[in-house]
Image (cartoon, rainbow, N blue to C red):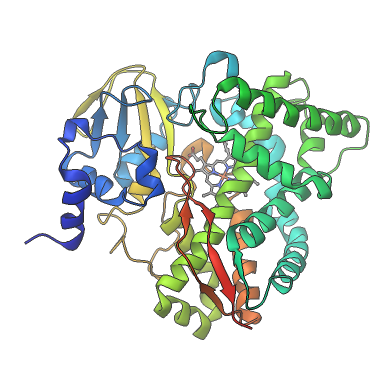
Length: 413
Ligand code: HEM
């Protein structure tokens, strides 16, 4: 007797011979039909070779422990050829510290990481709480609006503007550049060539170069531009490397937290017993935040390349092969996470998830992301906000950023 999920898997994934199964198809993320594909790979072929895909041949790593093994072994699995499944043409390539190994990676990471150190987060807490209250107070009552735009994007973009000390009135440019940076050009779409994508990102570089000039001639202070301008590890970056690190920090701080905010609301409304648990016991908020981030997995994958022949799951991975760690799949691996397909805000070992990665590139901004989500939920509980979802969530057609472009809601006043 098949489980419901296996039956759904038959419809979506099992009609395809395993050798042809390509889990990178963006459509499956857009229509949320990806789950049975990963379920099948975890069960039948956890280290899976896809010979033919729009991104060329690649390995899929789909089980929790295998993903940790790849992520924590940066000598064999390097990020230096890119961290997404897409191969960026050389003329459009932008170096950044996530695409570097030691020692340069550590030097640049250490340049920016103090901004999310506990003492600075403590300073930011009051500001985030005031902003959350203002955003929530300003939402329409008894009228439909897009939660993604008015809450998720607004809150994360305000935070990013603060981290860069970026002109506040222009903050939506950060959202715009972030969205462009994660777009893979496609014929027939708004961004239909790498040239067009690079032209827009060069506007981002120009804007930030003006800020850099201003900061390098001022006293060092705690904002990301000033920190990079005054550090020996980053002071002499080429423009392309500056742009690469900007994109890393913008995308890192933006898309991920944004989609956890939207996902959180969606999950709570779809699982009313979990929302009730949280309302009855607001001390569960930190635990709920971790569960939201696991369940959403805002970055679906990270990519590496093998630097040497190696065996994994009985398969021979060759030097140079592209290896994709599907965090989104590992986070649903029942062998490590009990009843992993269920959303349970007070589950045991709730912080045990892959959403922030592991190893030397483990997310530098994770505590800031958790803080923003925690404050948002605390203030939503305090305000007894009754949010109703009034339409289908629109999902992004991406195998990298796992998230939403729209969630129509209404607040019942
Ligand atoms: C790295 C996820 C929030 C900045 C990463 C990685 C993941 C990730 C998966 C790569 C880990 C690896 O390769 O092992 C997330 C999620 C977030 C989030 C799910 C929110 C829920 C943030 C925020 C910032 C940020 C708020 C910035 C303020 C970065 C940076 C890196 C990174 C700079 C590169 C670290 C390195 O290469 O050493 N993040 N992130 N992230 N993240 Fe985040």
